[in-house]
Image (tube, rainbow, N blue to C red; front, side, top):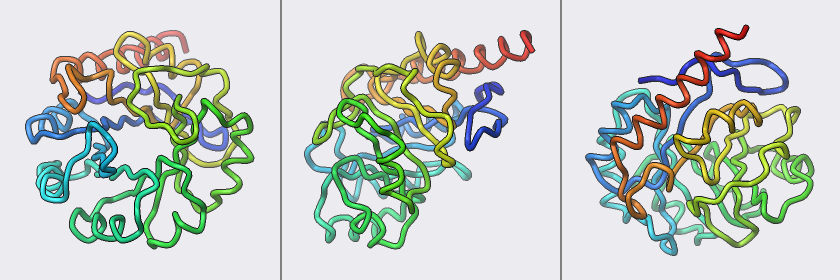
Length: 228
């Protein structure tokens, strides 16, 4: 089931619906369930320090399992450039997601489109942070502080999400079926990114929770259409 037309915001312009990324997948069956649920992207965690880490062989298999038109994003966190290049060579991700304290020069060195995570636990001025990463395709706003990791299940204050950065914003941190509708109404993101909110254990996703998440987002869109 694809989520309904809850309007997102990029430079003040509405989009037809909020996009969805399920992150931290480690099993073929979870990729299949995510694709069946109607996600726009899946995230594979390629930094070794994460509990959701998948090695190159796993990542390549998961990438192959994704259905056409579902993007594959590889998450990295202050990893060695050689490792990033190997990930690109073996996995061929559609996007890189840099989740650490990587510099703009580091992020652009791989000649690939990338998302940059914004650690909302420590960044006060999101606009200034975004200006430093002028080449980023979009920004993922997560609840962790600098040096931390995502997937904690903790949310941040969604009213802090800016509306006028001019590039897509992805909302992450503590999202689940119970709060995603409220989150998108408050923050108006281009996309939402969920990991722990669809899990039974780190890296082990629940097909039922995936469906419930998508259904909650679809209901939020239907509610807005009714009120319009």
